[in-house]
Length: 435
Ligand code: ADP
Ligand code: MG
Image (cartoon, rainbow, N blue to C red):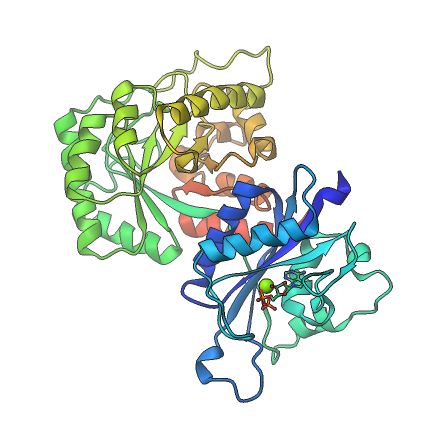
């Protein structure tokens, strides 16, 4: 198996480099199993003497560890990488000129190759800190360096005057800020019903780095007060209207399990995600989803609202139960004609699981990561943290951060959180404490 593992370098300095890295990872994930992702490094572009000034644009670089299936040889891998570059709009460009995306094979412990088309390890690996440093995060140091004495790389980072910066930003996940538009949500009931407060929260979350806003106007907590369709639609419309007026730079997700409401909203607004806590169980939801191009967050639950006495059977591994459920669900949605790239798995922490089952799922998130899945996790402030102590839901951001930190090396697509700043810090910080 070991010789099937390869390190790919990803780099970009055109358009929005962070989004380009993310997109390239998304495409890599479609072809290979992504095992690990390094932090992101920022550095000045290498340009030849006399190059145009506009070539001098900062690069973001990272390294990605992939596992390949089958018997692809290095040249076939290179071909796939070139194809991804092309898909992303890379032009035939002059050497050293800015690029949307550059995908290189950095390292392959089984391949020592020197041909005109391809050198593995990459010919410049040992004199480019922006390639070597991320690689050292994801690959054994001795194997990469062998008996080379390379001290410059780390020194380079430590010297402030040098251009390369270890930013320790991570490509995954996108932060999704929770916006409850209800009087009785478990975590922050009522805060956003006042328009001024909602505006403040929208702006603060944007500032904290939320890239997706999840608007929900029906509380799904146990014993929630039922809400009429009319009220739910009105709350959502008003909030999205405000989102538009404030020109918030983020994507919209609608946390809703009613097709009529979504359909009414779609006439007035653009939104990117549908977040269905019932996992697209209702035919109307599937039909609505089929007509559009929204990304679909498919959550596992046993009942909505969740009942404490209705949980997964204890006889089988909860991860296995979720994966089995997902495989059936996913296949059904694909059969109906929904493209697999639109599907996002949410194991539904707090919905139909005992506290220990919730904890077990969080401890074993790595097993839910696979080539096929985009994963969303929503554990923020949930009842699982009653295992940690007896603080009320609205005060559980520290408890939430423990988990965020623990999973910070995994390629999770979206984290649904209440306190974006705290969880972002926990995620980035977790990257410094590798196991
Ligand atoms: P850059 O040097 O900026 O990566 P390109 O992506 O255009 O520029 O690479 C030029 C060529 O380098 C590729 O078309 C490829 O044939 C060759 N090459 C040699 N070794 C490698 C490698 N390890 N990974 C990717 N490309 C490589
Ligand atoms: Mg290249």
